[in-house]
Image 1: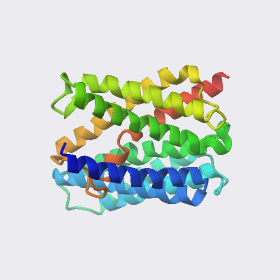
Image 2: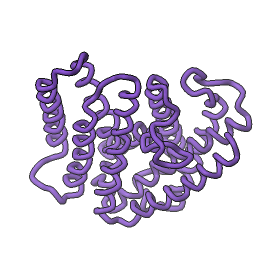
Image 3: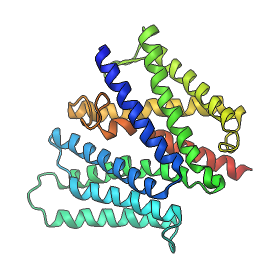
Length: 287
């Protein structure tokens, strides 16, 4: 990677970090209601665009609208601004509406040669991007955390991104053995170990610095959590690489200079957010 590209990526990362962490730590519900559906909607739009670049037809507008709408409505329910319906029932209703809506849309579209594929990949995109990204909102409004749920989201993002940074720095300096050269030529096993170390260290540091805000995460669990989140982060990144390789594109978009698109920004978080949420649920119920 050229020095100019590294500088550009660093500047973009600093600006993004200030915006995202500023929005999360502000505790302002409207910020969450804006940034999460916006990023999720853009990432979903890019995902469908990558498939269409490969010649796979999708219901791009309908799928993106449903995904962004799902993220916004889910925020309303989880934040308590919309009452009268539980989150599990809401998600079942959304899946039903999406499925029936796509099938109905397909009935009146006689121009497609592969209607089943079109419906299937549109549903897959909504699940892969919108449904998985919604676990960030679940963390922000995680009931046992109270008002400190936003710190859980910050913890998730920091540990996930430190995995990427550690893998890049260690892999660039010591990387010798390629991990999956077909999918990601730059990733090495040495970098993977570096990602694990950076994830565990950054997670431990956050818990030590913010013991009250991150009280649900015990210091003795950090090594395990760091390794699990780091592993999920790498898998999430490789999963997007599969999509990009099939679509024959380097980045999902050009929205963020030096980084790529919105999907490039959240690809790892799509895997780490549900993992952290599930782990917190299990630990909380176990007492």
